[in-house]
Length: 277
Ligand SMILES: Nc1ncnc2c1ncn2[C@@H]1O[C@H](COP(=O)(O)OP(=O)(O)OP(=O)(O)O)[C@@H](O)[C@H]1O
Image: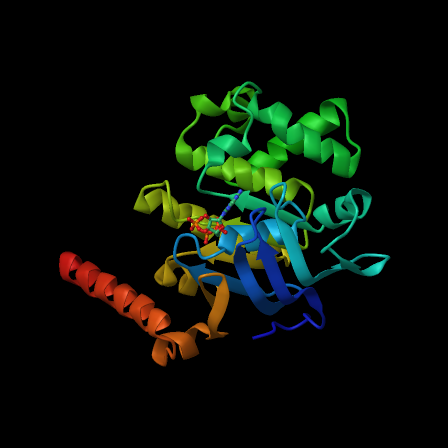
């Protein structure tokens, strides 16, 4: 569903292929679009090509891997920009429009040797040209926006001195610092305990709405995806096997893999019902 105000497609992926250095097709013929301010869930088992798709959109595929097909992004001032085959200087423009939070490994998103505040200051300085006291105030505001208590203390801390949930929030603040039009959230449901996951997801949901961002939400968990997006695309072995609204897919899954995902999510639901009774 395209929300009110979302008139054009922010991201258009057409016939995307990703090939490894040794010639294996890791993603094939993938086509989807994300209108501005709308959300899409990309779901699939481990190794199905979700993270590589995200990297291809940002023009950050690992060395030796090649993309084919087309990925275009609406860029302000210049219209649409093709990511596939773009030179590094064009890709820089695109990276301002797209940011990603990789939740699986929030520690690797952060430099362990640098205080949190300094890490966050860098993209804010680049984006908004702030310095000194104004930059410090912007860092505090960014940490407050992701609902971190005692933002000044967190800013002074090193990543290992704060909790996993707090690191996730810092990673979200870093991604938001460049004010992207599209946020890619990769596997937010791994690595954290269930309560913290739910809090982080609610935060993400609120921020995406408040800022009118588009969201590409990557997960292997259908229940989580259906809580945050209204459209899903199911990936298996690097190919799209099904797409539609969450309701369509959950109520009438067509592909056997999607059916097994839906059955798995239902079993979990039943188990949770049982434990809360
Ligand atoms: N740097 C790499 N070199 C070679 N093959 C890779 C590389 N990165 C990923 N792959 C392969 O590409 C395929 C897709 O990987 P990808 O990381 O996109 O899967 P995924 O769906 O995101 O899985 P997960 O949920 O485990 O992160 C896998 O078969 C993986 O082994």
